[in-house]
Length: 166
Ligand SMILES: C[S@@+](CC[C@H](N)C(=O)[O-])C[C@H]1O[C@@H](n2cnc3c(N)ncnc32)[C@H](O)[C@@H]1O
Image (tube, rainbow, N blue to C red; front, side, top):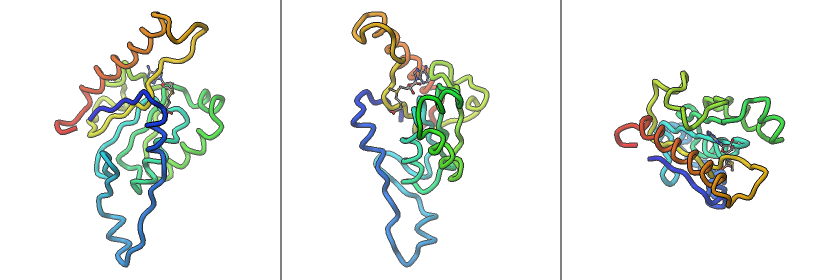
């Protein structure tokens, strides 16, 4: 499944933490597959175009593990640190729970990225794809084309990186 969401509110509603329930068989429960809507802890999940990594941190926390999650940003680590005050805390949290974090991943070329090219994923998600802000209106044809190219590039690459049932 490839997913991209334009409306920020939709993406944010997924960022809520869903904790484990208390049972007598805590150990078994933690080892069992955990499902949240269309995500499962057994899915290989690729997150693309993360901003401050809050979605990745929330998803990994909710699934109880990050070992099957690869979370990526277009921004370098230095740039992330400048742009978002919580990004580094989220990245540390992700690495602590086993998630792979990779910076400077462009969705338009990601299928050829050296750290991604040998992997297939069950879920590939780009929440709120957006080319960035420019010194002109969002509604100019030039800016609209930039956004369209990000979405097209993402879809062209993502389709090559999906598992058969992804
Ligand atoms: C509006 S923000 C959304 C951030 C995050 N996905 C969220 O939902 O909060 C758009 C993101 O797309 C990223 N982006 C823009 N062009 C990209 C590209 N070619 N490849 C990967 N990410 C890109 C930006 O760096 C930015 O983080």
